[in-house]
Structures are given as C-alpha cells and as structure tokens.
Image (cartoon, rainbow, N blue to C red; front, top):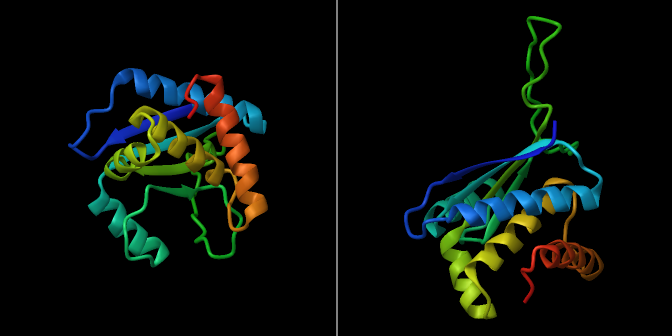
Length: 165
C-alpha cells in the first residue's frame, strides 16, 4: 500500500483544477517520504468559511473560521475516543488501520490569504495541505522552535514541486 489521497469538494466558490489535485498527491508522497511514511490514506475536503467555522467551534471551541483543520486517526492521545471495530473474519483487516486522518481546507480563507501573502491560490492550498499532513503525523507549532521546524519541512516539500514564495 502507498500513500493515497481521497478528496471531496464541498464548496462552490472555486473549482479545484485536476492539475492541482495531481500536485497535492505528489506533495503527499514527497512529504511522506521526508517523514518515512510509506503508506496510508489522507482524506481531503475543500469547504468554505461557514462550514470550517462550525467545525472549528464544534471540535476546538474556537468561534471563528480557520484556514485548515486536521483530524488524525492514528493519535494515541488520551482525549481521543476509542473506535472499536469487531472483525468477524480473522483474515479481515481493520478498515481504519491505514487511515492517517482528515484535512479540511477553507478555500475561501485560502484565497484571502493568497492575496494577502502575494502568491497563487494553488501555492496557498498546497501549503495548507502539507501543513495539515504534518499535523496528522504529530507535528505541532505551539512554540517558536516547533513552528520553525514545521515551516522548514513545509517549505522544503513545496520547493520540490516549484511552489515557492
């Protein structure tokens, strides 16, 4: 099994070109290689500010829209609920075992940020996707040092596909 991207476009404001999705799959593989992750599935959903605002409120208690949310399936945190999957046939695999998690990107927020930062929407969505992936595998940016680590990793992956600032 290799790293796979499953995606869904829940918003109507921007049509996501197929070439961008191909680039996101490439970024997933590059980021996975850089982190030694060879297999798994990442679910990506494009949405709008209204929907991500509600998710941010429901899951993080933050009453405003954000650019990207990540929901890791492989966390060992004590705050996560245990998901129990009963296997009737011992030859069956747990269907969640290869799922790394979900990344949700507000295309509306990404568009505003791309204008603010003076780069393309494609670059901003790619940045948010790699950022979300790093969160799925355990990275965080709660302090200056960890933020610098994430930033270096994100920029290194984006540079490989020509999406620099």
